[in-house]
Length: 418
Length: 94
Image (cartoon, rainbow over all chains, first blue to last red; front, side):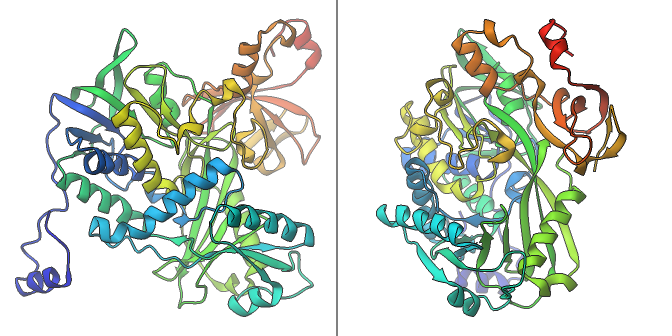
């Protein structure tokens, strides 16, 4: 791997930038691998990287039907946080947040992780009590959390609507100071480059069309570029988990929905944290390029369409302008929809399947981006040792049949409401 | 934006309606199922890309319940019928 550094920049600048090597190879698929990872998104590439780095398993192929960074990794809101109430979620998401903090150095790739904090606004005393309960639960587990008064919120985020005579007056807020954002493309590019340098084959434009299963054991996959055999296969295709799992005959507790988000035209720095609210589900933040990023909200009905949808865009604009009236003059630049494999309890499906050698990592609902490093780390350990890593053991797919669901919002099996 | 043909009100904007659940969740004889069948009905979905039967409600209109046959990628609506609990009791799944 060609190391990226100031010296390398200087050296290559002097030679007209003609001598940079590609960040990863584009090998032809071999006939057999020890492990195949289906899906070259953040989770798939992180899995391959940690398989090679932590477990020395380098005979690995990552197959993607499109290109690296072209799926859900490029269709999200790039927020990284770990403010969860349920113990299992809390531990896992915070472990992941810890990994994010060291990734730029580890991968020798600037993932632009910016720990600018998240601020969740309360609009009533009841909501503030709820947030105090969350903050206390986090503090008891050693996760940073704090409460802000109305005055502190308005002095730190002056662009917020501070009027008491508004639909959502600000009563106070909860802050996770070490949460933040990262650059979505960098995380996949960084993991792809690092995994490739350890010997992992990254094969783009290779769509899996079927599974080779013999006597209850996976033997390989059929792809648009021929059959590839493997000892183990990992489905890491969040968004399209149901159709890929169906190739192995698995039906899952998943219903697929669309999540809508959008950015405005870029403006000068005005918002240096991520704002959430107890009144809606989305985020408002400012990207490094200066765009105001708004969303995301589910369409609330099943869909695989990956298209923008005006009713939700209007809704997101409405709540953003209620909190930030001065954004009313901005023009929208881009909207997108991410595919969310919504599970019946709002928590991911990760671990073993009833088919030997076939593993699943999906059902990330709309919480996949923040968990990329933690999921890859724990899932690689699961694959290497053929048993669930303790961090992800609670997210096994059979939890619905045993009654041990992990339902952060308590909405029951109504996936559109998680 | 989808235009949904309400059996009572005619074609109306999607924003007047609310999706409730996949029709498979309610298409059953509740008294006759085992525990594992019930768990499967509540939690497991046949989440393929294609036409699905879905239960929707015209919440901001007549508040009637309807059953849509809708494609989950193109959003094409191929059929709509009114939900009738009396018919289901007689063994008619519509």
